[in-house]
Image (cartoon, rainbow, N blue to C red; front, side, top):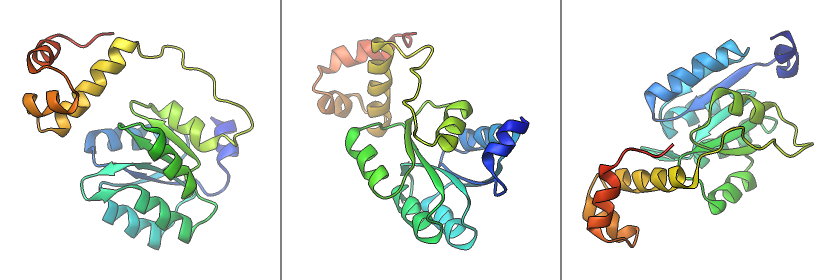
Length: 183
């Protein structure tokens, strides 16, 4: 714990921006235990307001928020505090968004699900070495299932629209949705 605090430096302020209220509260508690001083926001507007009035030393920003794009918060943070270490966190991992996030100033990019250890490591790493591979990565079946669930939720749980977007037969999708999630 003492070595974590030394690594954090004198300014331990952390902004967490995510519209998933339960997730952001859990992450705030976990980051507080690791020595950070977290402040949370659940929208782009709230995140930008904090970034402009009290720019933190560290930030974790969700990419897709209900009222807009988390990259707007990243830009506001970069303007007010260029030395802020920012991690973009998203459930919609794609190379294009990762490149966009890094181009505008994000330090790192993590796909959900990410735990507090992943976030802490990303915030404190200085990029000297490649990250270690995960101990227990998701299986290919689980990744496929997660993607289908994400698209299904984006389509407001409309099976026909989800099947169309995934270029999949509707009955096939219904069978997949009826099964339990793979490990």
